Length: 550
Ligand SMILES: [Zn+2]
Image 1: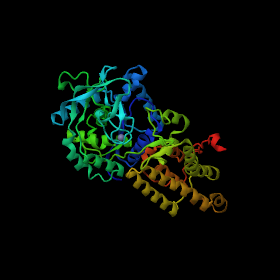
Image 2: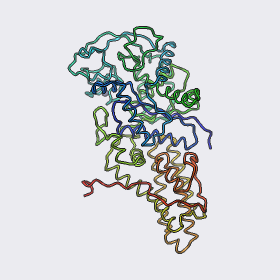
Image 3: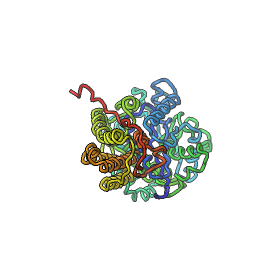
Image 4: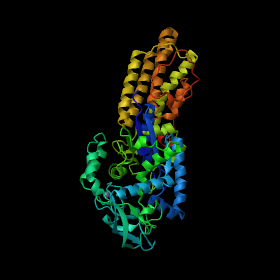
């Protein structure tokens, strides 16, 4: 086996302003987990981290709407998110929040490092002052028309339609999202700015060789950098968030570090927190200072500039840590052709999904229909069809008919056998194909290769007809059943990153005592004489809703 390599798997930090929906799972969390599990099974040293973004203005907007505090809203949704990861088997090594002391300290240190190195400077600018709320409005509280694509509901920081980063003054007819009738006055305010133009050349030198990125991510980033960078304010007139370091002096009490800066830094602060909690305070350096470490950032496409431009700029400015290796951003999984949106209430929520379906059925559908190269659409009909026709009828059926036949005709004992050469060849080629796809973060294609092996298993089962062999030629029946068990045992490993719960259950049904994670990416022949327990179905066939069944 190859040497254990460090691999950092990061996921976007969700805002604690509402339940997540199926699009978040499909675009970010399930793909990241599949990839992390695969790397672990391959024997690599994986650290998977993220956390809840408690500080974004979406959280304060929600608190304003509910008449409660941002801290209460953030704590509530953080607790809810933790239940998703548990129920779906999203295997974070640490899932934290941006409200920890550790996060504040590391972010403030980072701020001072950039200030000392000359990448931050103070400047006065004009902010939008809401005369009803009597305060400066954060960018995301300001809505207006995008000057580029003319989307009507662009925010003061970014247009979510065309993905361009904006400043509030770029918007056509800006207005407050809190008080649409409020007069917005332009008033002078002082902020710290990140001097992005200074980092433009080093960023281009870093990004240009990254041709292994997904084509849309690479193109977007290079165009963005070649278009020239503007300085960006990194503080805001707000009182909810990470305070500025005390070293900057007085006068900054009613300002906070802007959320895009500190939430990105969460990738580093979470690794440091994980190391402290593990009692090995310098263990994080393996994922941040070792140049052989590969860092992967799983995000939605609207987050590309923050992960391929802004965050790398901060890291280059620090100069003491490594930069991202890959940013496998996904497109969107829409709902009936409409973009899912937390704030607009469009999209099946994760709690609704989890109450209706088993975790591996959800994981299967979201990867089989993953928006890797283009937007896809979520529909319950499609979910049920793929579950029944692919997961149950192909993989579940192969497992169940093989193990049931073994109980009936072999009293559950694995026959002495040597794997059939055709089966062995199919296992080897499926394994190579899955590895090839997953190494390149092509998860949907990897899943298809695993399913193809199961499909072959069903064909081979039919061709060999062990129900006849067992009456006419016992040796041939032994050969068939032993080989089918080896195929299932191999497919179990190939499916394990995608379907961890059912692969673990099958692992037990194949008579293993040690967990699958400990055995890892091993493709073993089952030993003759091993006694297998009575099988249980791995998957549930789902009822087609009555309206469509007619
Ligand atoms: Zn736009």
